[in-house]
Image (cartoon, rainbow, N blue to C red; front, side, top):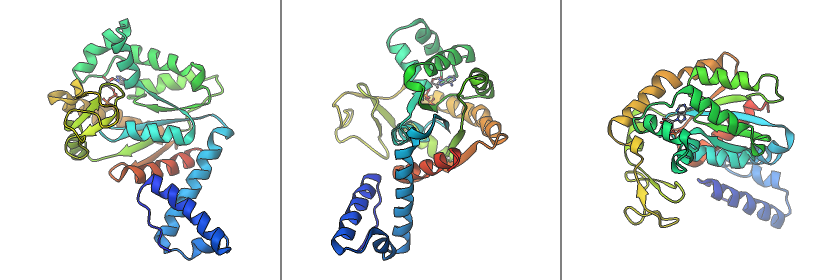
Length: 280
Ligand code: ADP
């Protein structure tokens, strides 16, 4: 039997097929797995470990993880998948700002002037917004923080805020992608108006130009994905946010994952990283 799945759903399908095959042959899953070529066996064992982990994850305790990655690293997509697999809330500072802007709140209006130029929003505004969000009931069972903290001052504000509570940061995962790949990904990125589905005119174009495949809404390019703002954001990441790696490393709370791989492989590696931060 040949098992060499390449995508996550395929892997789930193969795992199910394996169960049925083993039942049919009446030889038990383990004996069947032993007959597989070694690379397929390795991936299957990894998949099963991650799957068992995600099923038990939210039952065990609150887990709080920070995902660090430059703009265009795939952080948003991966955060969505990872938070689902782990059963924890995905809190993205950029989404909170965009929501505030679209609702026209005072915070949104203040933040917009910085965001449009590709600058960071001042810490006082950002900290208050994210730390308030963490107080909400849906965050109590654990969160995956995406885009926050983005500098040492924010990391310290987060640690201070959690001091004296029953909550701690288990660790940070760095999603690593070379700068030239990031630039290429960002300058081709388009997002749909209705649900923020992400496309890339170079690597993942929509079926019909300018229209979302999933909900039919218009695709647009974020103001901060254009021109000088892209370079500004990457500069900020590589000068400022990158220092967070040392901050979490000093507490032995940092794991790096190669983000320049297929979406499924990155997800698998992120699950492995989350497992290690949770002490598995
Ligand atoms: P990206 O990481 O691609 O810049 P995000 O959606 O995470 O996109 O954030 C959009 C913008 O919101 C950022 O460019 C920045 O101006 C602002 N922002 C988000 N998170 C923070 C933060 N932690 N501190 C300061 N500004 C932030």
